Length: 311
Image (cartoon, rainbow, N blue to C red; front, side, top):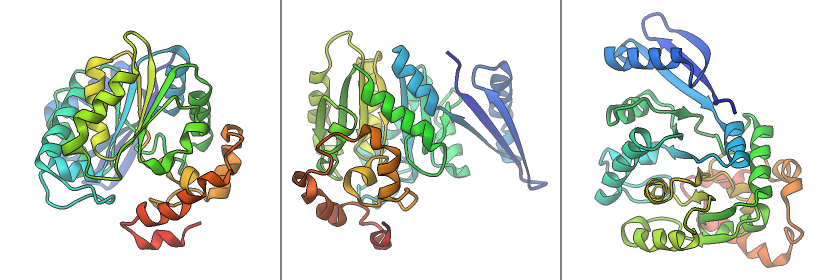
């Protein structure tokens, strides 16, 4: 099975010129370039981003039973790890415990967890910061690897279809408004968490719930849409269950499951229904789910009221 392709984007700050190079992650040239940049601090002259398109690769890993993980570290994780005050767009408050745990989790995923890919919000400060706390090069994947934006949606539909059709046990950690994901992806265990601020007081309890669903030696697909604490969950679970497949979906299923736009770049609900129609269960339109839509308008995407104008 081929490794995912990497898109090496180099921006020369002196000449304002972008250079794009397509390489493969296991290509020796990737290691040479990365190590040269890392040792010589060339990021002071060049803005370099390695973005691997891993969506198809994740589907292949599921089909072939290859352990893999994908975690997203966005602007909230960046602010929390840096010890900033305040909260992210989901009103998840930055705490000391969360800050320390995010840094330790990131270090573990990059330096000690093989075949672990990271999505970082592609801002130069973010990439530089996370690179500074690890020893190894980051396997940097597209941030929207699992989010239905305008990029490679067919590949993402294929990945979700692969998840649904897989006979592996599937566990999804998410808020209760994403209950329709159970039928959409044939999920065996739904573990619900609060919409925010659960990490400091409930992390151990939630970890134990997930752990109790996993039998020794079996390979499961573990998916998360549980905010910043998801990254720590994935890191800690990998330490105990490295054989699994871990996918940080984030807001990727918000729109299809709740009809609520939570980020602003999603396709319309009708477009998602059309593209994911093969995955819809028979009870998708059942009135037992109608309560979700009004609740979602109140509790999801509340950081930007203008999102209520999206269809």
